[in-house]
Length: 502
Image (cartoon, rainbow, N blue to C red; front, side):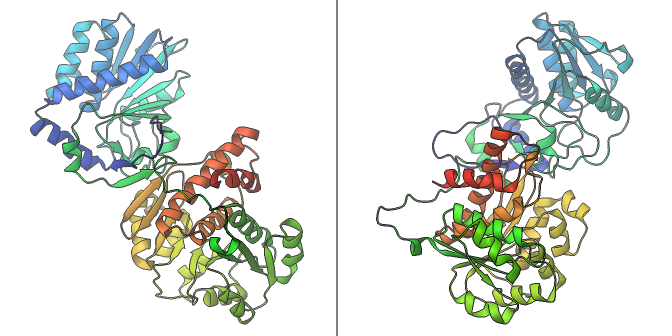
């Protein structure tokens, strides 16, 4: 979660790579004439103030300091705590004799103020009561695996029952990709100068806790000189559906057709259909295996369910919809391939999910096709198949993977995850929305239906993708608030989706 709140429309947040943040830092020093030590003091002050505000009952602090500027920030925090007679112990992962520059000056400040320094984790007392641990071991330059003695310090922090504040980024988290092996599990992360992409991608949302951003009084002119890596949207920065006129009628809000539901998978196609209806599509139809029609009519009679046993039977139905969603429960049988092949030749906008993506990746259907009017919605595994690579490669650089899929197939690509990426012709956007309770069957089917419904109502594909991802996650949050995360079902979101699009 990010601490920024919204009142009315706001601009999306800019996210930066580690290299871009280093460039921002350099420009602050060289062009805004802010000495590096001043920036370090500001960062330490900002983190210490947030610590006191977040844990007002804190009665002692343990700070874990590395050897770079991140460690220097930690030493400033320790010195400020000592100034206020707050008991503070600093674990020095790097010998003070090896410190240089601003980090050394910060160490001397903490030492002068009376902070206790230890070089052995065994010298740290048990962090119980109202203690807070501060992680200032590694900064944005980290990549790869943790090495001694930092790996032991990270394990020590994570084994403690005390809350943890991470300075700039949790140690062990990749600042660009959000990839992490062993890493600090923080309750609060205070990050500086530029929001790092990795805080919001991959493992980032699970490791950072609440994220608070402080620009350290950097001027806007500096940010204009360094391009953002991503733009992060939330409910306050998204394009919304227009208010409906009093004399509206159903044909003004599009016709979504869901194509899917092979033997044994009818529920997925029906959930996508019902989600499209609840998200405001004027008309919704379903093309599925004959055995699923009766269940569809019983569950949601507003959905016009039609039985299809071949691509040839689907053909005349494709003249009606303005948007076709293919994939929920589709399977990978000859029937499945026929339906995707026929749908893929229409002029209606397309949303492809699940097995439609797996068939596409196989190269037998729609081989070499690029369309500007389709949305592809892969998760990590499907993304790897679309790129003919490994899941590990996608996880290592999900932004590059999303861009590569978009360049290969055109249109809009939604790479799903805790931080969902939306790649389109003009760049890549990020949405953080939802909760772990949504890791259950059928959630992706709902998202497919919502995307299709928003396109049917006239939104551009990128705007529909952004809003649908946020609506889907927010509906999950509201449903979880009512009944908890564990046991959350996809259909629990439907009533909340309806309220959110109103």
